[in-house]
Length: 466
Ligand SMILES: [Cu+2]
Image 1: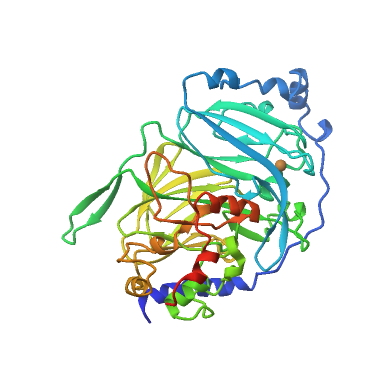
Image 2: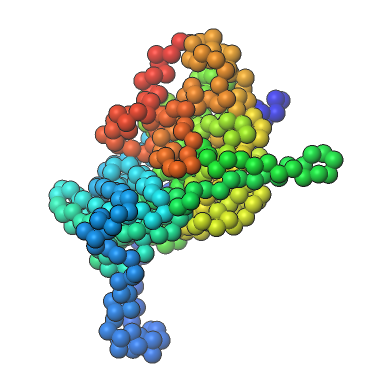
């Protein structure tokens, strides 16, 4: 068997095993909330808190200036970050929908990108007909929780802060008086802020051996082709409602990457391109296979060989992420703005923790990025990168008139998925093209197409047969 095909089939075999879990749910009876009482805990500690006047007094305003008038006139670059908190129905694998809570009708919410030292002006609006209030705690800020109480339906609230630390940071629905924050976050109200280091990213060094025992150091410019991956879980009843009982027992019904299970695996177009038959799956778990799924049709991520690739990874969920790429080594792992590891096989990212992974794909091929926890892989955490032209498609794409000359990655023909591509930063390489893909409402998908993302579901049918 062709080596490249065999890698695909290995991934497919993993998915077959996982398929036995598809559709199954772990609905549990909701467990009742329990209140802490002084009698049941250490009464001295409780008395101390009482004597101090309660927790509010030990959570004073943090150092960060939060007065928007002051910060907007501070001479720093100001980023206006506008969010709307809305409950909408969105699809899940298997043709059903679930009751999602979103920022801007998309899961994850929009990615904010700023430079260290910039001011973020966050405005959260809750429509009058929204069923509940929502808030937003941005981990890139260093403010007391008292600054981000929830916003009621029909109201707008705002805060400002200086993004003092570089790195990747979660934001999520939160509020001092918000009941059920877990439901809001695990139903989709999360996103990331990328804070680029003030002096930019560092060059990437990769060690290679020469064969005669010598080690050559290869250096790659700081500029990189970038992707974002956000891991989370869904805890749902059969009816698509949040299941708190399942959450308390860590019985997730799905593992999602950027909101979707298996959102970055081949679809029918790839089947046709590679095997000549749209209905002959090259990856068994192709739940988002059809062009009629529009923005939900799965897409692959394409990179060039010997290209510096930077991944912004955030664990939005309740389970650890053991980030691993089948067939690759993570050339560098950074957290905050500090290098944590180099040339490592897997990196563990805990809940509400991010990591920046830099790497170079050396050989043409198909690479699966996974959470190397088998339960997570089988329930959705397998995402595919294709490096170079491993299937030798360049001549056929040229014959069909899709491209005019050989291209270093299929992104030039099909684009990279919009929900995995962050806004451009100071060391970003522009993607050759971007297609509209993600857990967006139709309204949000239309906006993303209007911003330039290609609606492949409209374009592919107009292409000449290959
Ligand atoms: Cu909320």
